[in-house]
Image 1 (cartoon, one colour):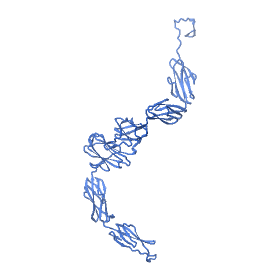
Image 2 (image 1 turned 135 degrees about the vertical axis):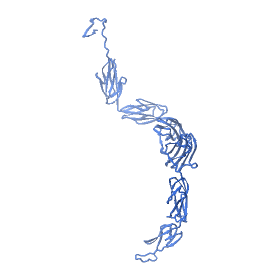
Image 3 (image 1 turned 90 degrees about the vertical axis):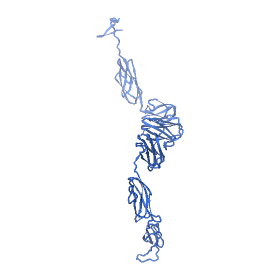
Image 4 (image 1 turned 120 degrees about the vertical axis):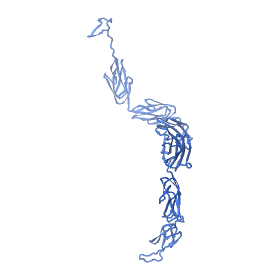
Length: 573
């Protein structure tokens, strides 16, 4: 059954038969339609056209049923094209779509169209409505219904010059050099979750116009930010919570020498959390590239100190409370602290800072910087002293004045300027010494900042002391292990319990070694000692000068002299 107008009706008749093919008179029949928007059916089988398309009408009696096809084919009343205005570029493509509708506004399926370009020199179009830009300009394209060209629609087509666009990498400046009045275009892709987009122009050696626009190239009248002809300055466009996607930059009017352009899309992942009082080392950034940090300032803080140093190059240091350091339209946010210069050594001190997050930006200078540190200290008029344990022994450490009293790693606060003395006592093994901000066996430290001291307890040690006796001189040195004893001047040293120490003696000219004493005996060259307790070794050296012989004019008589052996005479008394 076919219809060509809305509301047109016709009836179906259903005949019910039994298994033998005999007609069953008066059998009840139920009617239904598959798609009521195409055609409806009444209880007696009357079908009425409702809209373009095809549907199935079914008659059912008991378990038996039969269907028939109904087609409504209304003539096309209108043709439309979408979009009505479309933009493309030289060598690029864009798609148009044509739609045919009947008098009710319903889409006529299967309609075919002929496509024609008003100016093929500017744009061509194929049989599916696909456009290809040829040359810059504005023209139109027509879609007409096949078989009835009076049913048609047009679209305006704008073909733009295919302008080169340079991709900007997030946070990486580029140098732009061109002649006066030459336009240059750039693009940065902004990811989702970006809380601030900064587009910055540095080191102008002339003048330039500066545009930024989201989604398409900026023009003289279409932009999201425009800064005209700034001389010898920095220019900034910034956008809070920018929409994700492509953002475009246009520069025009700069001179030889060039300018530096950079774009920064700041997300939460661009910020490094600083720990209070802990240096973050190895920080580097290129020219005009920013590194961003944050520290949480607790309630009661009396001073916030932010510092950078070490490494090479130069940097600028910024700090701001409550929100990241950002660059507003035409400048930097006013509520910030700033230190700049020609090195990496920068310090910002903020008295009585507002509690909460503080944001820090460190920006590389004209040559960037490498291997610098960043430090943030939030203090309440005191500094932490931390003691860490090392070694295989054990013991306790306490401080004067009180504060440190622990047997494992611990930390205590001391007022600024306090002189703190640490004492260590071994409970297992021996105390070997301090390191860190104190080095050696004694530790006295002035609290002018956070301090870290290591304490080392190792295996039990005993002191070996060498004492030299007699009228002569000489040295005693340890040869196993070599070095700790060199007496000389170093006449005592500590050795691990059970260690065998070998000492070697050497008499000076005019002296002779008489013998060992204490833990060693005899006159041998070496002395061997096993260190099981505090030990002392004596080494005796005497002079070897002979007694003077009688002279020829000695008044002693020959009777006072007796021969000892041939060639040598000694006095009798």
